Amino acid sequence: MNKNTLIDGVLVKTLKVIPDERGRLMEILRADDKQFEKFGQVYMTTAYPGVVKAWHSHKLQDDNMTVLKGMVKIVLYDDRATSPTKGNINEFFLGDHTRALLHIPKLVWHGFKCISEQEALIVNIVTECYNYKTPDEYRKPAHGSDIPYDWSRKDG
Image (cartoon, rainbow, N blue to C red; front, side, top):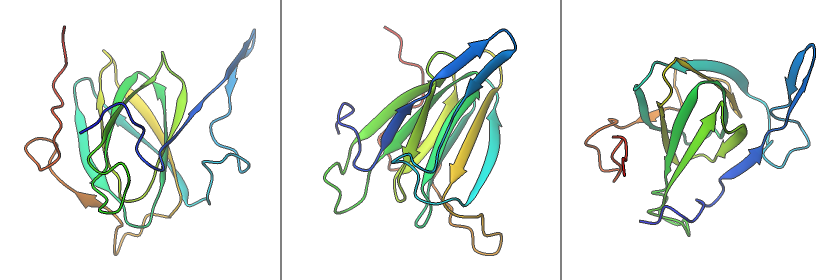
């Protein structure tokens, strides 16, 4: 297991916040970004402090996640049989202190944990619309699955 090598297909775009006396502006995803494949839908989700929302993956959908409020640890695990980064885990700390867009390719397991003292607000721009009849959503338990990751805080 390697935590340092970026999982194949994962992209990170640093987001630029432009402040002025009226407020601020931050572009998240543009049609001319290399992360952009196609538009499916945009949704917002939140997590309360200490909550883990994991593990899930998709067979059809790519995710493009950013954190607008709070801090979130997003963790990815690559178990794709033919991937050059099979077995790798990546951790990303996004939110108030790190403005970035994280592109998560289909078939990569992912989840997140709110690590701030307030509720975290996450926006996800996905390549497919949610199909209520046959969701492209595959799940494993956050704790005790075959994914070799411990969500507890790492002190030291």
